[in-house]
Amino acid sequence: GKRLAPRDLIPIFSQVMNRLRCRFCGDKIPLRYLFFECLLGGLFLATSLSILSISQLLVVTMGLTLAIYDQRDQQYPLMVWLIFQ
Image 1 (spheres, rainbow, N blue to C red):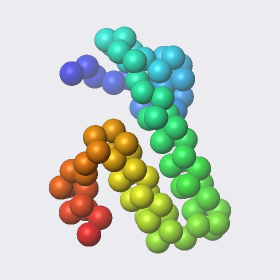
Image 2: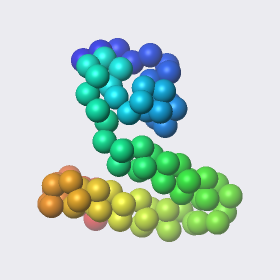
Image 3: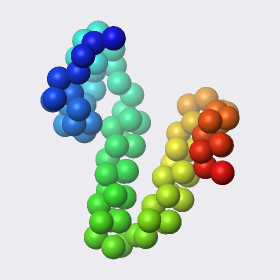
């Protein structure tokens, strides 16, 4: 419920600067979020360098999203299925 500062809006930078903790409440942020941000950043960079096509980027992003939900909850939300259809 707090207003984010500009430094909080840079995902990887803010997570590392806050030592993987919430700046406001001090709760630990799981390492998988940092990994996911780095991986997706690399995929978007590969797409901008024409190593991957947009369709390949979408397929890999969908797979990663489903893998995160599967690892965390062992189920997929209906909204994820509706978006990826």
